Length: 75
Image 1: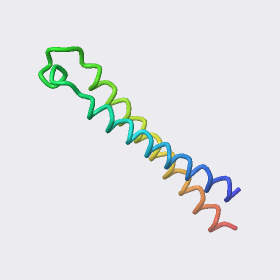
Image 2: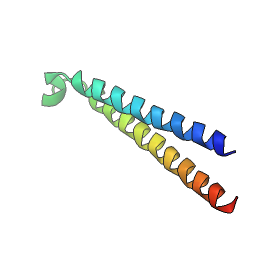
Image 3: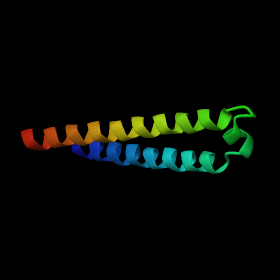
Image 4: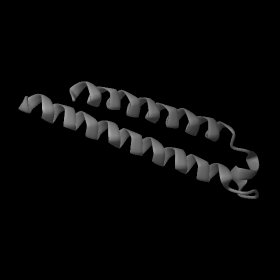
C-alpha cells in the first residue's frame, strides 16, 4: 500500500508541475488586447483554470503524503 501511495504522490506532483508549466505558457501567450481588456478574456480564464488544477493536484499530493505518514506510524 505504501508503494502505491508513493506512486500516487509522484504522479500528483508531476501533474501539478505540468499544470504550472501550462499556466506559464498561457501567461506568456497573453496578448496586448487581453491586457487592455479590448479583446476576449480567454487567456485570463485559461490562467485561472490552470491555477485551480495546480492547486487541486498539490492538495492531492499533500493528502497522499498524510495518508502515507499515517500508514507508516501505525505499521
